[in-house]
Length: 63
Figure 1 (tube, rainbow, N blue to C red):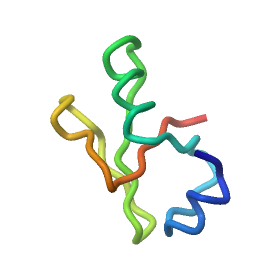
Figure 2: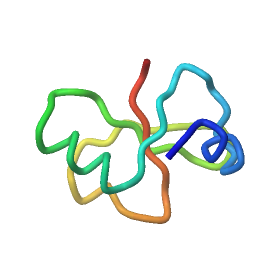
Figure 3: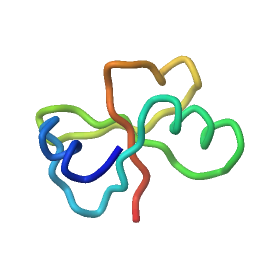
């Protein structure tokens, strides 16, 4: 996942590092980093449980 793909998806805040669902799951399970679900209307929400991480959404962590 890269920034260009994130922009094409519709999320454009440059303070976010984009992640795939698989990358987000791995970080959620192994680190104490806040994961965000990114939406195509340029908004995001905090992920609070592993069940919230699924395709077709993009995810991110703050830089």
